[in-house]
Length: 639
Image 1 (spheres, rainbow, N blue to C red):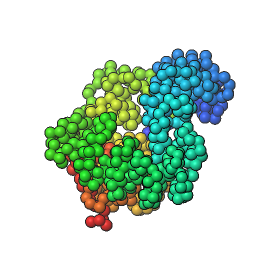
Image 2 (image 1 turned 90 degrees about the vertical axis):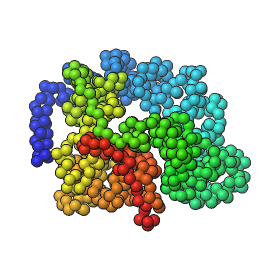
Image 3 (image 1 turned 180 degrees about the horizontal axis):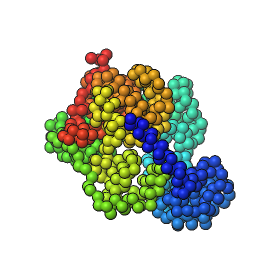
Image 4 (image 1 turned 135 degrees about the vertical axis):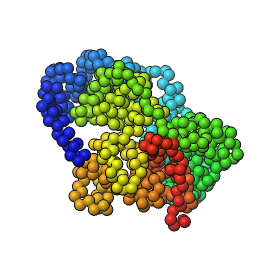
């Protein structure tokens, strides 16, 4: 019945939309969008000359100017400037400024670039690099000091930064050891091909051999000449090959390190041991702890430091947890996860007062470790406060805001990406009450993700009635009950999956409210005897929720009926969730913290927090996150 009602409502909306299309000006906007997509400049010119009071009228002019910037003709500077003056402060003015800056960088007009860049509010990584290039090309004397200060931030910078960085290195304005550090981090990172560029700044001959060292590291190491270590480049290539081999063949990497270690210096050996330990830690292998110790005090990157702590947590070595959290840089030490685990480690050492002080520092924050810290102080999570009541004038301020009106129109025309961009831009610099009014406005129009995110931005510790919505309950609850699931957990997972956006689709192909993958949908449909399943039905809310909740039940039953394991399994697959268990029982929070996938680790923590908040709101009584996390049983073969 619910689905029939939604379909009838949708048909009425479409009919109403079609009947008023010409009057509202929507047809012109949609035609201009299509002309942009097809590169039809003539149509864009014609539609841009037909200005009307439609909220999206500036988009037609923006699309025309964007089209012109993409052509080889000289950029229309006067028209571009006029638009940015007329639309000053808008999201479109910011976008056009960024588009123009990219064109100026391509043309090499660096003086104009710097003048225009000064007013850009949110440059992306590429434009930040181009700004560095502009300063280099115009002889900015302060550039070298800025680059040295930000050197570590630029390890994964886009290739657009290479012009400036190589120039600094060539002039000797960056310490050579810092360049070698960059090379080593890139070799061990996600984009090792970038390491070749960095190495070319230091040793062109070595750079020409890097591809072989990375592509076939075992073969490269086995064919090293006897005198490979007489040059820095030769030693670094061997270290690079060992680090890459550690990703897939840790025993092989260790054997070759043992054979070659006398020809590597202490820091070089330590670097390889840190890489071995990190990879072993991600694989949850017991050797990780010993290899971290073998690395000694060699400098490590953020991930290696984090996994050194996680390895100690997983083995129950609290003294090591205390030591490693004490060695973190100041900014990392203040992160809630490490504050919490350091406090737990202090408790094991009988230093309860110090621990309580650390727990107090993060307790009350509505995140995973804030809630756990409060429980350590005896405070379970109570039903949270609602957002304050807003006056009609405050609500009207959001309703009449030009940017939010444009965003709502974009959502209505199914231009969601542009709508989100407009919406977020309109919230910049606004106070809490305006943002809460905007969240109410989004909720009024059933744009649930904007309501949730906006309320979260407005009141990170409050406004839970807006941040933890329960839409589509008449659709969801019957499926939850038929599957014997916890409504709080289902809402907690769905909130994390889609923010209740029905047409949500991930880059991997997951669809709908519960982000069901087509292959998963087919498998579940077979399990529950759904004979009329077709992949296209995943976009139907009823089918999506039926399959999603059925999948939750199936993996819950397969994973000890434990919501932490099942949440991990929903995101990363039940097979992985099983493999991530230990040979001995693990505290649920430690299991969550030591999930090897960054995305799944963050996902599980947030789903469990969502579950606790929803339970407190739906049940109207305090909830314990720690009890929900419980204990993760050992792997069956280890029991």
